Amino acid sequence: MSFLDSNFLLSTPLAQQLYHEVAASQGIIDYHCHLPPKDVAENRQFANLHEIWLEGDHYKWRALRANGIDEKYITGNASPWEKFQAWAATVPYTLRNPLYHWTHLELQRYFGIDTLLDESSAKKIWDEANEKLKSEELSARGILKKMKVEVVCTTDDPADDLEYHRIIAANKIGTKILPTFRPDKAFGVANPAAFKAWCQKLGKTANTDTATFSGFIDAIKKRHDTFHAMGGRLSDHGLDRCFAADCTDAHAKAIFEKAFNGAIPSVEEQEQFGSYMMLYFGHLDAEKGWTKQLHLGPIRNTNTRLLKTVGADAGCDSIGDFPQAKTLAWYLGRLSEENALPKTIIYNVNPSDNYVFSTMIGNFQDGTVPGKLQHGSGWWFLDQEEGMRWQINSLSNQGLLSRFVGMLTDSRSFLSYPRHEYFRRILCDMLGQDVATGRLPDRPEYLRRLVADICHDNAAKYFGF
Image 1 (cartoon, rainbow, N blue to C red):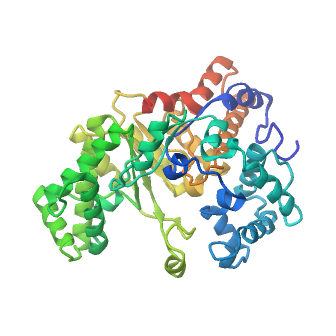
Image 2: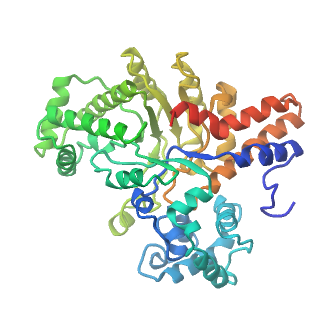
Image 3: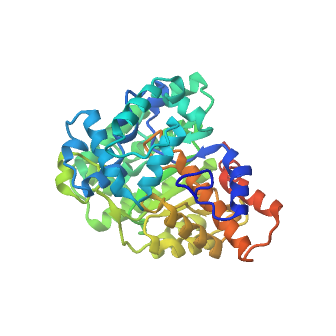
């Protein structure tokens, strides 16, 4: 078998059949990503490979630093060509890192380039790819069409005015671009100055006075309503773990006023306010039939030197080892008691939590929606082959893989859509191996349906786009 040939990752004839005849043709529902709506609204035409490939990719930044590349050639003031050169020189050192696969899949799928990237091929690939980037097919919208992307759910702050989403909606570009409600700054009372500034921005966007707790709550609901009117059907929360503390309306009001007026609430009060707000967000989602996403477990911005010089999202995050089970059970249990548990997808970044999450979702399935609670796909440090296989096996052993809503990109890059192909090949390979070893029956109608559902159809039904 040759590197990245048509049967890449497909180790049995049945796996090859399932992928080529079923999985490969499915459209993409990218229900969680970080693509900038501005790029789609303006149909950005990328000037060169650095802009579209390296500009904001902290996966590559981490590899460059590990290879001893100076920050000047990563996030510094080196030219785009010099930064690409540094990446090309690093690629041969990424053997067995998923970046090696992704790099060459992306060169093949977008640019038709089969040449291995290294220092000797860098200039030729740079020139060839940059020439192709001038085409409409590789504009922001062109890429979505080329990759058969049906739906993109971006990640948006409630204080965002959604201007670019309005522009996109007015243009009817073919791919649905929908906002996702990400209100993490709403419980940022640990930093009173930043919290107050965000509240004021939220108030301006919602045309509501947020200097009072009631106004703050009202503004959040108004923005949630606006997201819904714009087609948004998902919320998202990035937490180290769920909050889990009782908090009355009066106490939440007192904590809000304390932070808004410049005092730092105690750690206990921060936990209480976070719990109060997360329960409120759960009610909002449940009332509208939305899906809540919980991204749990990372330690962010650990390198304070780079945080100060480069900023957040610089590739200095890691897997955290926070205890998850009790707080997650508390949060889901409270929403369930209050008849306000929405469809929920829970993602773990720590592989040790795979079975915690796969078993936890089974505790709160209620028979109203197939797969109402989901163990989300391998996320962040786990969105590679081994992590995907672990998540699929954990969900298979403890729940219903057949109801899984499948893969997403969780990416800021328009070149990340081969991640769906990667996942689909891995899924088909696992099923093919199971049949070859007698673990599954050789029933094509079962297997083809399973593949189509996980790759596309389950997500289409679950989210109702």
